[in-house]
Length: 81
Image: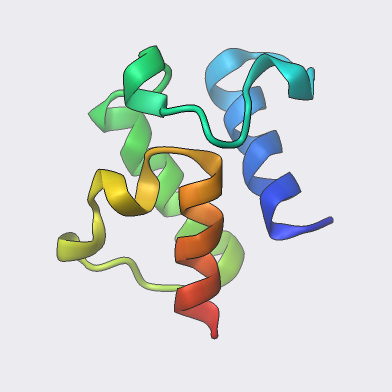
């Protein structure tokens, strides 16, 4: 399973309570759609750190890195490169 698929599945199951991949486009804003709040974002961060064995610094916890599946994928790829 690709990085994108893993992240997409996690967000769908934990925040939209579905397995339907069409429920969320990869470039849709979590904040804009009201999908993930600050507590939920911490869950996403813990998932990313555990799943991809990365450390996300406080300064990296910004919408530019974490506000959509596509942004997270690019962020994870940078962190694991």
